[in-house]
Image (cartoon, rainbow, N blue to C red; front, side, top):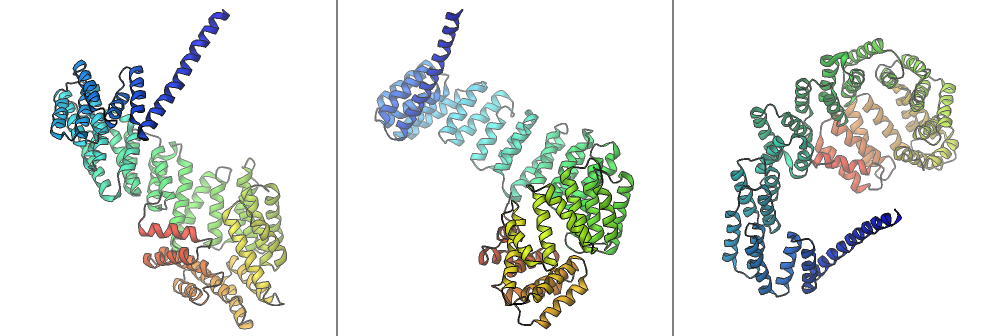
Length: 605
């Protein structure tokens, strides 16, 4: 028994060792060829060819090595002998023609290429090998003729569809490439992801996708049972970020296949992520209204629908009271239907924020979150965010003790997590609001190393701001007044905030807070939809305080104002460009460059 095991191990090891040596010889042969040591390469390629019993790769490189080494007669003799032995091996004709071309016998080479094609029979393997041989020799027209003859011989355009699609891609004939990828899909519908991947790599721009869509519409008419064409049409619309038309195709497939809505739900989430809220709303409404409560996506779609409606209304800061009232009613209907529980906690937070920011109803927000805070079985992280939001609203409601207590609870429970860092930042900022600048600055300095880039950047900005303004003179009164104004703005007491900011300029006209006062005023005006005033104040900062720390903030805010509210894309683009060029060290520089490229029309993944 032991001898038998030893024998088996020895055989396996010998095969393993043989494979390693074989791989080393192949690598060395290719290295010799690349380095111009053609005689050495020829010896190794012949050895490898003999071992593999005529593998076309090694045989072709054996011939190429002989020709490159000046042994044309030997190469020709070997080729003629192989052709005589295997007249049906049409690849040999291509290899022989290549050799003749290298000797500048072009007409003679063409005869062999023609003979290879003329000798073809209805054999898929031989047709494929000949087509690949022509492609390897960069003779795309000959490869095209080969595959098309194969289609004719076999009376089947689908059998070489992938080959032809790849070939037409190489020839940059996108309309024919698309045609054959779609033909390949009809033959193998399960390969749709492969087709998508190829089309994604090889199609560029609106015009080329228009070719795809035109052919898809025709095929959907001719082959209504190939649902992959409809799926591919949906995919094409998504590539163009045309989510409304993509939704129509997704809805059609959902109905035809009697699906549970997953296709539409995924598309809605994609549209929402890309901020196409109108398309996302249509898709979510289909799930909640047409699919109804039987769909497993009903509750999530309901929540997402409300979120998108709110984002749609609030996104550009342009909305009416009737829109707000209508949205409030929808939130109420949702909570009446589903209640406040662990699955609706995130929506309760959204609704509470809506009550504070848009309806000026802090007490209602606090009441909602107090209920959500006490939920049993809530995820610790979700409960932490509920507490942070609740603390913010307690500050607005002047309930300082409850706010600091909640911030500290979250900080202590989540020290190593993002939500814990956020709690520490909010607590430090509240200390800044109330004039405890030294403690606040110590916390901001610690938070400079926060794992979150946003928290780190904000901590750096506030630390530098406090340091600059505390070092200007012996009094901290101007800074205290400014912090109070920011607190008033945070509490939505906008009139009092404006009054406090104006008083700083009256009492301390020479103080270095002028740009900060303008910046806070501009932000409040933007929130209140007073866009001309906000535009003027941001512009004044940019023109009069180009070296101060608020300038890059003002440039970014004004660029966003032009992009979203004032609909002046060119001015927005110019400001984004100015920001990442003139203020390359700004924390906004990366986002500004991305926005600039998007407005310029670049394809950003």
